[in-house]
Image (tube, rainbow, N blue to C red; front, side):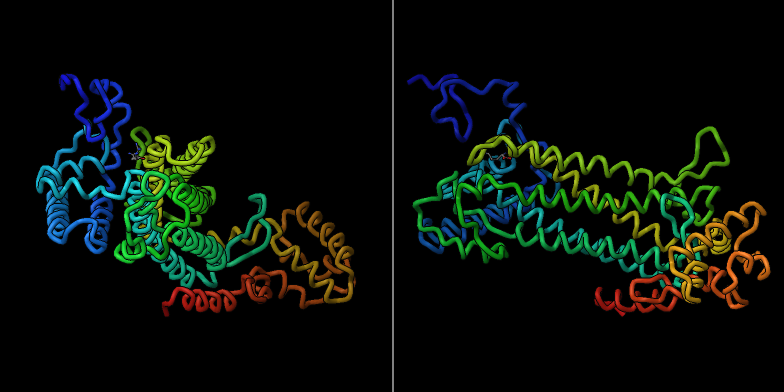
Length: 465
Ligand code: ARG
């Protein structure tokens, strides 16, 4: 038969014409999946060792493959490497380079394997590593939060609901709320990591393989905790990518909420904090501006990451078993999610220790808005008044104080007594913001000593002292 015009692809045997140039570009993924090169080689080395162990290839072939792959890895690391779009993806680029280097033995690497279980394995190896990086960054941010919380355990600020002054709290307590969000994020990722850490190799294209592969051996080589239990599921499952992106989206939702607070607090209207100059930028026209661009961008990137989550869900929802090429589209959203989460966490490790806290401004803001009104109601309850009754009395006191442009603590005892005869001189202890926070000393509360205890417990949870 005339060989002219035939496909020159590794899979080209049954094709009678070359791939259309557009299709070649449209289907290629090497532009982005080259990022999996290290993991692809790691997986291939383990597969080759296993093939040697079970005798599907000879020991000499195994050694040639492993040495060849290691040399390819070294070349890729030096950056002295050209990826070929004609070879579609990272897998075929590396395999074809291997055959080019070591000849016949290289052609045996793919025995009992398909790109379908190969790419699923690469992706899991990649994500496991990146999750560990993210977990380490979560721990760094957690420590930074605790350090600031420690310094600000007794710093009084207004606590808000509806962004209206509600009750006085301590800044340390507020920061511990951030800490809790982040600990849940870490737990979610650790949970997700367990389901990432499952090995698909041995599933081959979809149905498994007749070669006597030792899957447990390969899994041990690659540090996988278990092997997949169903080949159809293993080659097509991307739940772990979606789960990761869901966990990442929640991390970003948290960072976005903090960022919104930083933006508000850094505004001259609040003036609670100052961000370090090195984390701000200026305006090209207004010379006075110092803008909180980093928190603003973190807020924006939350939309981008949760968009990736949605795109991955849409990617999966129509796919029949088993592998479909749709799955090639999982990589760009995943990679971008990983990069974005890691950067945003790093931003917080940089910003938190450098926050300048304006304690006076926080305190005076806490003294506005009748923030101790609940304390007055609780005081009346202590004197035998039913809470709902007390609520009404204090409402009238607040109304009166507002009409005189005074805070509760500025009203005289005589005036207060007109609203309720049970009020005595000791009321002024509870009307101060210091008294208010000190009273809230149940576990989980905002009292400075309670916050200090919570910080000690948090440090124990992190394993730091
Ligand atoms: N580049 C592909 C991906 O990312 C690799 C698997 C291709 N498998 C196939 N049968 N075409 O999913």
